[in-house]
Amino acid sequence: MKLPLLLIPFCVSLAFGAASIEERVFNREFPSIFQAWNPVDMPQYPLDTEQQRLVTAAKHDLLWEEPVSQLGYGVKLVLGAVWDHENGGIATQFTEETREQALKNRTTMHEINPDMIFLMEIRWKDAPSSYLPEDSDWWKRDENGERIPGWLGGPEPYYYLNYHHEGFREQVKLQARVAVESGVYDGIMLDWWGSHGESDPLAMSFLKGMREGIGEDGIIVVNNDRMAPLPNTAPYVNGAFQENTFRFHNTPEKWQDTIHDLIWFETHFREPRTNCYQIQTGDIYSMRCGLAAALIFSDGYYLFSRDDNNNPAPDHLHHWFKEYDVKLGKPVDTFKKHENGLYSRDYDHGTVVLNLMGNGEQTMTFEKEMTRYDGREEGKTFVIPDRDGQIYLKR
Image (cartoon, rainbow, N blue to C red):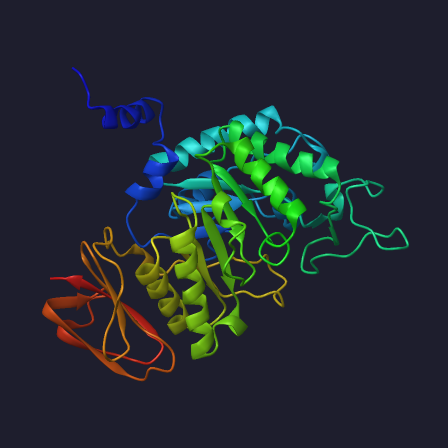
């Protein structure tokens, strides 16, 4: 039987297991939740065994991990590929044992959730003290030759890396290529990018080299550091990690800023786009507003975590909310702004509505009978409090 040309890549991907990266991004349904390093932190989702960790991780559609930092916290990895050198920054490959196990774990999670995307964080801005030998030229040093302290919230001292060193830039590109060529990861994640990489030609040079190394199909997500636009970065990356801590979503103007940035990333980054919109800290209303914003203004992924850097626990531990299990299907249009200031977007099985902070209590009226996602309200007209987001399903 002859197949149409457009179907051949799809059939080939099925024959060899997981669908292509592009198919997984476009085929998934919504909401889509991502995992930034650390897992769901709820008693009803135990993580004591490897199988439990894989099942819980597979609730997400995208995740990334980084072995040196997470293992330093004592966190058990999901995929679990580990660099083959005691100083991870020098390594040029994964240990064969952990690579083989990571491939098995990847297969297990894809059997549960075929649309998952897996990324590895590549360290480039700073790293734990164990990442390199203390006397390495790849550490950034002050005028006295001392390593310059970096992030202060880690399980061991972090120090800045010297990406102005050509040898280190080549190593960063190598590790990105190795991560993807291993078959374990679909791409990479770069932290601290917006405020450090976007305006530095040397950082941009290794970003371009990473894109060349992992190929056109690989995924690159960067932490935008609350910065937008990122015109230099845009040609090379698929998504931004918008890490919106409380001080970046505690006023109406700041909510609008996060949405403005999200829309810019959605319209300028390369496809398949994998923007990851996070609201960090806040109450249940913050969670619902963030989820609604992600669903209305993007085709990306969402995460809400209650932690901050004052909490000694690993960052980005998170709960799993019942809203995440709603079956919306796929979007059928772009967002709408209503006369009363509400925003909405229609999906196959329902409509998402957002009432941003400062807009006051408002009413949403539908043409047909709808049901709130949790079944608590039915009808055509619903009252939505100030600073809230809701999902309504078709009857």
